[in-house]
Image (cartoon, rainbow, N blue to C red):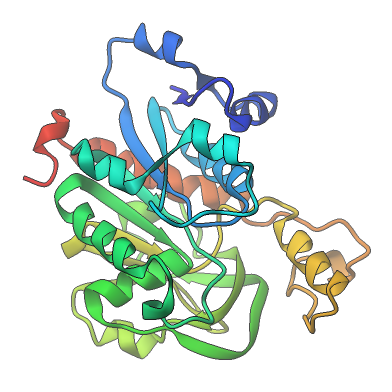
Length: 307
């Protein structure tokens, strides 16, 4: 089944050209099934790029997905056109006011990891989002800074600054091969990493409610299950396009910033060569498994979510 998104959302044309099944509102309404309602709380400055990345992954599953784009109520982005935000995004305050429920919610990262959580301008509202998920969302997926913020809120685990940016493609071990979220995974896999902070393994293992599913000897825990809060936290970027790390590297070089060549990304670590995508298949596996787990366990009646 396809993902249901507005036909005038840029992702509609992008995914159609890539062969991802998408459908508009009229076509979806003719199918006598309940689509899974998935929300994307997009905290990234490049909204359209992030929409494409996540829609691509959840749109490749065999279920109909109704994707809703959500933003923080007061925070304004300078990197995405105002008419795009007005046309396709709803502030979280509107979602709260209409008492909506979701089968799944993805909370993205944000390029603010150098700030203490409490110094983030929308931190208080974001904490209310985390609490709201416990009564209005069946399963939540926190990504990169979004995952670090969630694990801080629910378990008081703080992020730690790294001496140098973890940047590139790193091998990760499958630490829980019988997890339904890792169904079909190899014993290890490559995942893009781009962050200045980390969550310490010792802090995670000290919490009995948390379980590390994927981890790296070089860059630490990656994917964590928090069953008590019906949540997954991933600190790295399976959703990245083939050239996302290149864009970040080229940006930093052009701005004169000190940045290392992304690890294990370019052939021979040569930035003049086209980068290689070594993570695409596992990215689809992870998000497909997450969608399947939601489908198998979410109530048919949305009103029963959180009961």
